[in-house]
Length: 521
Image 1 (cartoon, rainbow, N blue to C red):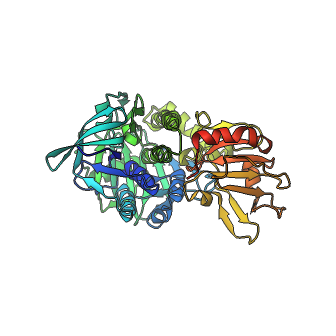
Image 2 (tube, rainbow, N blue to C red):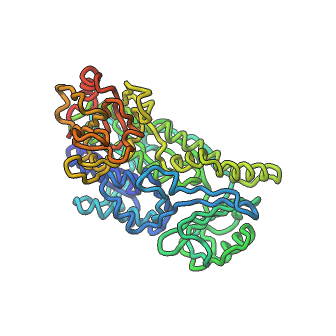
Image 3 (cartoon, rainbow, N blue to C red):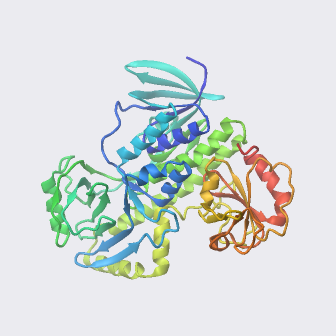
């Protein structure tokens, strides 16, 4: 057994790949293994939501996805005859990416693998974790490669190995939950004309929901609930056509079927997301109904949340207590998604006539209310997620502004006062360092405080001021962050870690920074 290595990442799906990408960006050594001999050729998860696109922006890889994806900017809901609802994502998601981007998962994995390869990191395929044993200061593992076993010790082990996680099982962590009774059909195929390639369509039929989601290259993902359980694991084009014709008025002709599958869905959550120096992420930690397309996005957010914290602890620039916040922040979010997707699944499930009438009538009314529509988009997109109850966020100026500590920092436009060129707030986070924003009237001086010199500080002045290094060029800073003199510390993941009045900076901010951001590198 060789000396200890830094990080072992078990599982090379999107979650493990994002984690490896971010750790290696910070110079942290890691091994990424996957027991499969080759990458899956199947499309699997296709929905990439706005918050994940913002995450890819912070990772500086979003253009790779925008170049190959199909934007979906609206969802239409139908009853058994008429349209009963319409959700306009384009006008309700407050993001640079106000849509769902449809990209097959195998292509998502290819993009991430290519980026890792540019950094000299490769996925070790055909490599299986067979045993692990946490010890003081590390984790001893047994890996099987080409029918040979090897012992290796790591400082940290990351379980990104899916619902049947070997890491979770080896740690003896429970995975309580249940299985839905319905059988679902999934198929990638072509649909004859008349279907808008920028809209998802959902039909709520008495025998089970039918949905069509646009994919790149003029293809569509068909999902049918309550498909016959006796069908084979790979439904045929004829079977797909029969189900669609039975449940969709004026059913379109289907053709050119590619991947198809029958599956069951589950709702389960790990009892804990961390044990000693081992962590669970993505499907290894939680699985839920695919309604809303949250699964892959949740895993990516788990990885992005943990990566910057683990990196800082490994590099010795943050207190190890920072790692406790991973479960404290992500577990409540994952539990909320499990509840929400469960309710949505039961809502669209087959019902009797009276219940179905009330459901369709309610959906018709609610989706016509602007206030409701404005909540649906951000919730679906992951924009509404906050960490306000996190142990590592500190709010000292509640009521001053819309954005509070723990909230996602809106990616507002900013102008350089001297030249007028416009940039976005997230551009300031490109180096994966925390940044400080000084908001408000620049005539009131920023206090000189020891211990903050390593964190980049940006003064953001009102639009009519010429004294700030950056200017609120269209009022969005004032709308979200307020106009009262205040300080915001934005974490590397784009969430607000600390917020106080400018006059309280000297008394409150250094203590916070010394604990979680002892150095800003």
